[in-house]
Length: 374
Image (cartoon, rainbow, N blue to C red; front, side, top):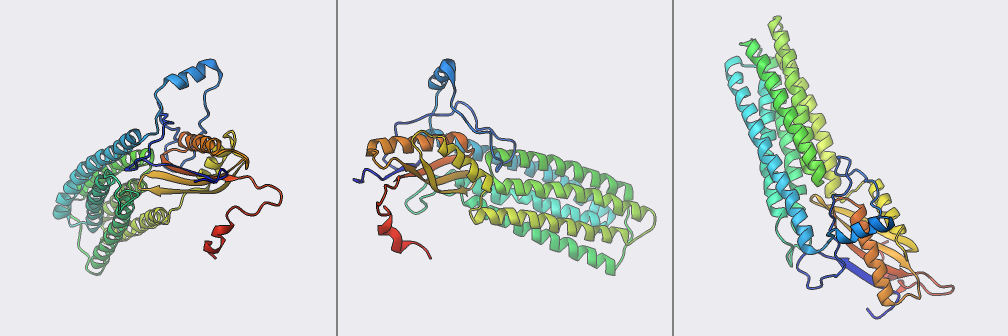
């Protein structure tokens, strides 16, 4: 672009022939407090001679290969979490299914079906993580990270289906009561269900938050509620032991209600991702990091979006109107660098430099005014 007052700088990571020579690979992970959306403590550049030397000598790069390595590692960690969860929940559901056949407990049946459904949600997520590793193409220019959000929708539908089945089984047993057999075994199966689900929940949520996967976190929350519904089966078993036949189907209905609560939370999280929602605090943090960059006079439009478990940014910064193209480029590079350091999970940033307005100067974007959305 020939206008010295405008500059657009894109830090792209796949297929583009233009490679930037401002690589700085993090020798450290971004500060994260354990949640994919949590705002980190800002990354500040080292101070003092020793700190500056350490910063220069430590390998730092935001180039294509390094970012792809990080993305692949995130997907690999997600895959490992899924397969471990599938094995644990599959074994839990199988053990409970045996007890369901022995006892005829509807409450335990609802819990077993829900645990089996939770285990099977690993399949769409696994497909999404595999797709997410594929490089961007001329058709899918942002890559395949959105497959993770589609997997989240499948998970929500699976939770809804398990809730419907649990409700149907409980109502059917209310209308046609049957005694529960082998009550001590039912109680033991309930404890097994709680232990298996709680372990899986902790594992999924921890990994999901580390890699920024909303779908994996939603799946972990799903498993956590399954654990508490397993404990509810104990209440049904206790009521059945006291001779109250309706205790088992009533607990089955309570489990249905708990599943619906999980459905609400998971649907809300997935909906926000599909609609490109980010926490406002994350935008505020990115804006503060940009304002600290030398040469940035103001920050204009700033947009962030999740693509799978990775973030992308688009921002306009205001620079000196008399700056040369080269100087505007340098400022844009520093602004991008600051964002990549400050915002966890951010893998790409598009920085546009606008000139600071001079007295009486026309709006530099006037040519685009008639394209603006109403």
